[in-house]
Amino acid sequence: MASSPSETPSGVIHDLGYRPYGGPRLGERAVSWSFFRTGLRNTYGLGRSARSKVLPMILLGLMLLPALILVGVLVQAKDLLDLDEQIVPYSTYPLTTQLLVSVFVAAQAPALVSRDLRFRTITLYLARPMRRSAYVLVRFASLTVATFVLVAAPLLLMYVGGLLADLPVGRETVRFLEAVAGAALLAACLAGLAAVVSALTIRRGLAVAAVIVVLLVSYTVVSAIQGISLEAGHDGVGQVAGIFSPYTLVNGVQVFLFDVPEATATPPEGTAMGLLYVGATVLTVLGSVAALLARYRRVSP
Amino acid sequence: MAVIETTGLTKTYPRVTALDHLDVTIGDGVTGLVGANGAGKSTLIKILLGLVPATSGGATVLGHDVASEGGLIRALVGYMPEHDCLPADVSASDLVVHLGQMSGLPYAAARERTSDVLRHVGLAEERYRPIGGYSTGMKQRVKLAQALVHDPRLVLLDEPTNGLDPAARDDMLGLVRRIGQEFGIAVLVTSHLLGELERVSDHVVILDSGRLLRSSATTDFLHATGSLLVEVQGRPDADKLLGQALVDAGLTARPAGGALIEVEVRDETTRDVVRDLTVDLGLGLVRMQDRHHRIEDVFREGVAGGVQPV
Image 1 (cartoon, helix red, strand yellow):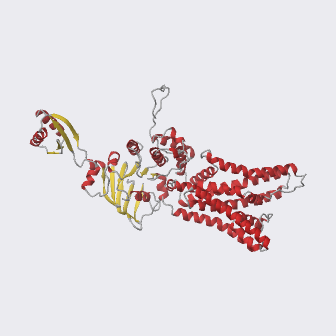
Image 2: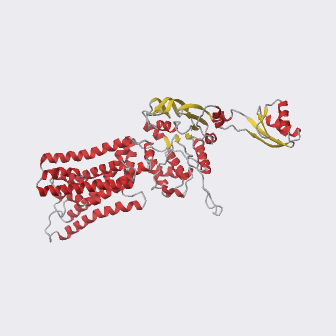
Image 3: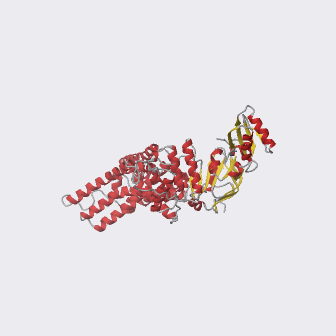
């Protein structure tokens, strides 16, 4: 506390010396909750530099924009166009906007995961009471919920718009809740895959590129195979191929469980194929978490 | 009560033995842990934090067992790593608040403690700028602040002066001393430079290749020899004259290189005797100083292969 002689001695700075802390110390649960919230906020750039807010906020805006237009059309021209349901089904919306979702996950997973490894901030976390596995699970949860917010926000907008347009409340509510469940599954799959890829590298750029490649390329290839198999009359091939992209996978699960309108060329048909989709989804999420835990067990403090 | 106690602590890696049956007890105040690079200092700290399991033997920190109560220990201990560990894109203030919360402080308390601690380590307005733009000295201060934010009972400082220029090094050592004395927090500070620690630590533990070389109070090292260096002038053979006079007066004196005389301090009156004899002989007393034996002298006499003096 240096004071320059030019300052008028209007105030006195008292050096209180070191003050010990005698207040409460929170337990593991409260610490994890605080860590989760910080991670979630950071994913949207909150509590970080202004520059890191730009991309997630733009993506959130772009996600909401089509929903806003759809709602506008629905409310204004419902009678004119003789509409009695959503123009785009809830379950199809994440598939239509998959590019935005992929870019979000690819940009934010490394910010949340690779960053601690790159700067070795992980050491400061490991030297604190939280256990290693808790660190991994909370990071995964933050990313999942952040992705879920991105996917589910436009669905909520469409739902509210649908109610304003006097669509049947009961039917819309059921469809909306089914879509929210689908959004949660999709978010968990995407977050798991992206976190595993990000945890393998300490380079942010490499992680971003790798996640983009994994998500976009898999979706493009799967869509192409599904299209071709439909043309060629081999639906089975396309149905199995659908497992290999999180977007078609989760959409297939929704088709199987909730009987939502088809959004892919070859959605799963029959109980066996449906169960395969459900199993693959569960395996993707749990497998990612297991891989993350295994990866962090090897991180030296 | 001992702050840290290890019994037969051993850690072997596939190729090297990092710690070899280490028995050491560390109490309150500032304790210096000295050893060459690879002597096992960092390994010891990681075991004490419960982050790395010991191969055999055990240790307690603040009465808690490192093998089974790691979480409890980490809540009571602050750790400043040797390597870089600060993210570049957040401010020091935000980072320390966050890490305070990670140590269990409620948000409001974490903010208040952060502001206090950053003031103590001497980080002013820079604390609101991203850490990426900080100098090494400022980064070290932030690393120290995050180790103190939760008011630990013990801090483990791994090479806190690494990479600092002499002025920043003095500041850091002064801080370490204050933490131990004013703040009342026990400190274990490592260094591969012996001379640094004699100024700040109450107790010094020397490790060599994972074995305990010596553990004793810093004063023991420094008081091992008490002697004066005396320089006189006035005549070409001034030093010989005075030397002879001192021996005649019953003191132990010997030439100490150049025109210097080394005189063993026998009691309180030794300095007076030297002064009086110089005056009696009509000589000019140029200087009379304590011959400070530094810690490294003690170890140069012993084994201490590879320990690097400053």
